Length: 217
Image (spheres, rainbow, N blue to C red):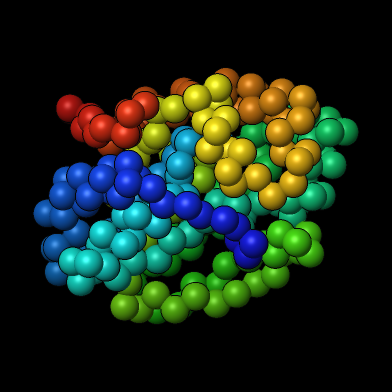
């Protein structure tokens, strides 16, 4: 999303390094591309972890592309906020074109060299289209609240921090004062009820203190 602010801190980089060490054996297979998600509640550090993973991969000579769920919302952010305020039942996976994001991942895994995807321009409250070249990328990273629900993933990662614990981080990234008003807290509570159940889908869990736990089959 244009206008997004990402602040990568030491704990993000440390968690990303551990994740890359875990997934490296699968990524280095020359025969296929790799996709992963980074999911969790608002403010849990999804964008930062995704960017830190991409940076860590680049240090190892592996190119990646990040697909942000924020670009795939049905409505641009200010319009979406108004829609939620008219009817809070709108909050949930139905707000997002997850099918379009899933298709972008499928196309990536199938070896397409270019993806056509939506792009949200926050300040102008617009959704436009962009073409993203991915022929040199080995890894696609889908990050966002509901990305655990995507089908075309090799690995699912979940950040185990709830919206009470993420307030400080949300304050750092907020674009407008309305993002921390009483209604927004109601939205975050509703999202919590949905997203907290997605932890069960994760292959890799990032703990509250940014340690790493791998799901044992």
